Image (cartoon, rainbow, N blue to C red; front, side, top):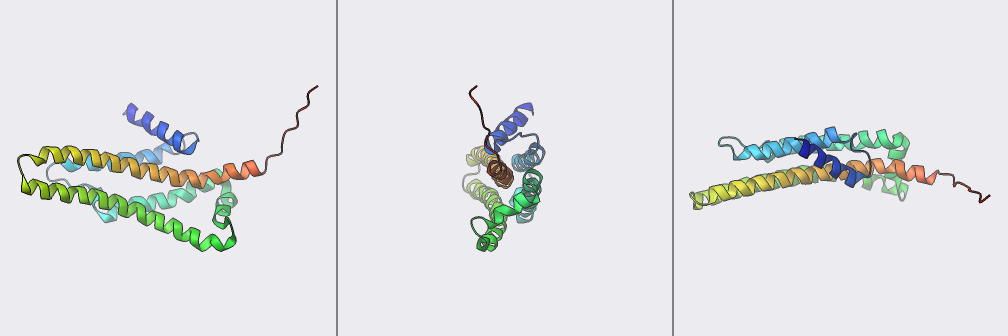
Length: 182
């Protein structure tokens, strides 16, 4: 478990250039839930919750609400909202549509990938029931872990971009330091 937590910290630090302590509980929970449910997919009689559109939609909605929460916590309410009017005020509707479509894409991407892996495995097991089950289970495990990683990385990228507004605002308001050579 320590290897997983350290790996998540490293990924969060690399993606956001910030202290991972703030984001680790949320991103780690997303990753562990998706990875565990996809790993349990190889247990007979168990289907991965990530193969259901309602579960993936719920996870994407969690990310949808986490983005402004983390963004406001890092940049303040005005710093976060300022990013919606860049480069002009006319971009506000497009930025809002972008937020909604990003959430929809997260849900559909995870659902489609997990569901298609399950369907392909079922088809191949029906064709060659003695050879393919082991190979497909191993590939299913690999695919499930990759999907958990991708979902967590995309969530972190969205959150980091919302939190980045503070860094940009701070750099714009900095007063240059005058140094003397005396």
